[in-house]
Each structure stands twice: as C-alpha cells, then as structure tokens.
Image 1 (cartoon, helix red, strand yellow):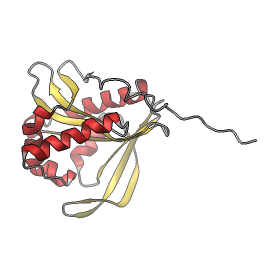
Image 2 (image 1 turned 30 degrees about the vertical axis):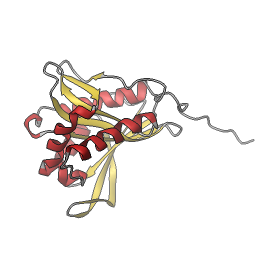
Image 3 (image 1 turned 30 degrees about the horizontal axis):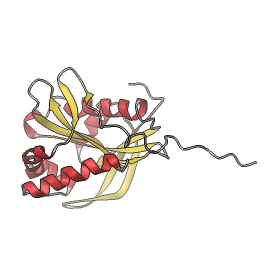
Image 4 (image 1 turned 90 degrees about the horizontal axis):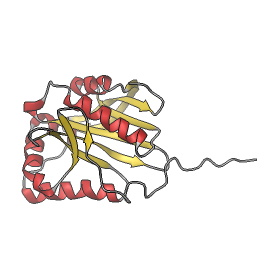
Length: 195
C-alpha cells in the first residue's frame, strides 16, 4: 500500500505572520528590508566583489526600491525570506542574509549572503547564516538548508564552513558569473545537525 508523505510545512505559515527581526548575536540584528534602504542597496551592488558573485547592478534608487519590493513580495509568496544585517547599536546596514529560495512543502531552502566592505572579516555573514538556519529549522520547520558558492570564492566557503554547513561536493559548471560559468561548492545543514 502506498503511503503519502505529508507536506513538511503547511503553506500560510510565513505569509500569515509579519517577517520577524532575528538576533544573530549581541551586535547583529537581521531585520526585513525597507524601501528607505535603497541607498545601501546601491552601495552594496556597486561593490566589485558583490557584483562579481551576484551578477546584478543596481544604479538608481528606483531600481533599488524595486529590488527591495521583490524581496518583500517573496515573503508574502512564501518563496523567499531576506533580511538586512544591521549593527544592533547603530542600526547601520552591514550586509544581507536570506533564503533566496524556499519550498515549504519540500522542507528546503537555499541561502544567500553578502557583507559590505567595511564590515568584512568579522564573521558577520557566518553569524547571520547560523541564525538564519536556526530560524529556518525551528520557526518554519524546514528540513534542509543549502549554501552554494563558486569554487574560487574562498571567502564564501569560509562563511559556510564557520556557519556549520557541511561540504557535500562540487556541482560542475553550475552557475554563470560575470566572467563565465563556474563550478560551485555545495554546503548544507539539515534539521538534525548540531552547531
């Protein structure tokens, strides 16, 4: 007799609630993006390192606002969850962390993150990613969360490793970046993994 496996998480779990503010550490908060954050989005996507790995150029406030609105809509559609990483004391944006893709029924999500140049080298992305995984597992019930990066992006590899994402392998010619197709390292955490 065929046994049907129920959905991992019932749809509506995210869209029915406001997007929360998450505390990644004493110094770091993850808060939902606001349209007033447009100048910081322009600053981020003007950075050569962020451009290199994210293939996006945002040069106007209108384009930046549309980027933010798209991130907000992904919450309502339950297809993604994105936060600005902020300094808890000053409120300044220092980076981004999120799940660019969520499948509630399948219990999966895929991470994205970047940090602005002045805040790099302080484990900000790793701490944000750890909190993001905790939220994904405990608050919305995902089973598996992945993080992928170009094999030559050693900074992102360090972030995933520090955030306790296990290296699982290399996906050949998986993603196109500004300079062409890249092999990608795949890291993942599952709900039962320990930090």
